[in-house]
Image (cartoon, rainbow, N blue to C red):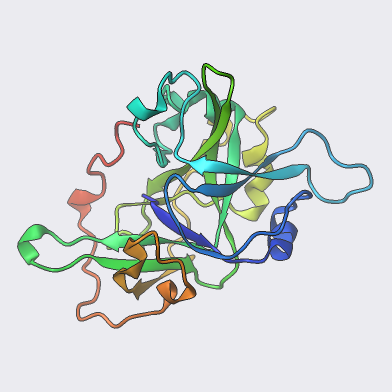
Length: 254
């Protein structure tokens, strides 16, 4: 699952990594939460003459996917994530998987280890970031929802997959990471059918991320400072992965 993440890299660095032409300035964000605007990158309409950069554009969408066929978003669940294993066949995501695949740049994401109630232990938040720094691109989907009065809202969701061996002791799901060499294929919705990019929706290598225990300040959306990522000491190390909990049906209604 991915319910909070951060994007603190500069626009210049992001432009170089993702090859986006029309990226405007934006502030560092240390606690991006559901329903807030998130930056996504999608394929453009044609490469700019004289440019060596790929044809990509950036836009802001609301984090919380709303399928085009929904009549009243207030009566529809907030879809933050989509299970990559089933998104191709789900009515909510089928059209976006075919026509509107995007990249969601991030500096890392937050996840919570939630012990069993019987243990009496508190939940522990972790800041999970690329081991070697930089930015990571999550696989995402977007949809433009139109109301009866003609107004439109661009919305998005992050695709998830089974957690790799490093993340599994914290949570059984994690965002799908698209590697730079696969950006073009993921974004190419004109020639690449969903089944042809299914191989990209797999857990990233176990050594890619490192998990750093942080305070519970990140639980509150109002907390937005860099101190959210300050490491804290914990009494107990992470438990080994419980194979029985690798697929507990989380987000299965997607």
